[in-house]
Length: 184
Image (cartoon, rainbow, N blue to C red; front, side, top):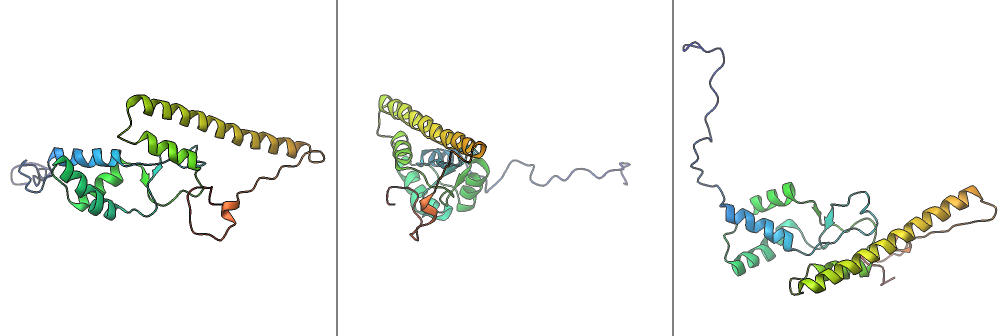
């Protein structure tokens, strides 16, 4: 106000470029590469509602990923590591990954295809072949879901002649949480 300005000058804190705790760009990039390299899977039934959401194994957490796997990855690649809070910040803000199993089960074929596709030991031709097989499998699954929908609609229209019963038995058995159907 003494200098004749009606508005005080902008706060200058944090604008000097000498951040002692700033993470190196290579370390942040190594977190992104690590998170992209982890095998993930889509939910078999809920992929239509949220196609970009992927899931990790149900026994993992961000803390266990950071402690057990990220440090091994950094040591192998000889990359600088970030802190756990920075790891969690990148994980939450840049990736759409969940830990708990999806509400609906996945089939073992989908899980097998995704694990094979994300396997770094496979050559490009094998990965391409597995991707084609996976896409064909998804088309067949969608056809089955569409058939259930059309038969349900037919049964609603003509309830005297047609009946449809569809059951998800995984929700009924008193067993531990499993993500694939073959144990049933």
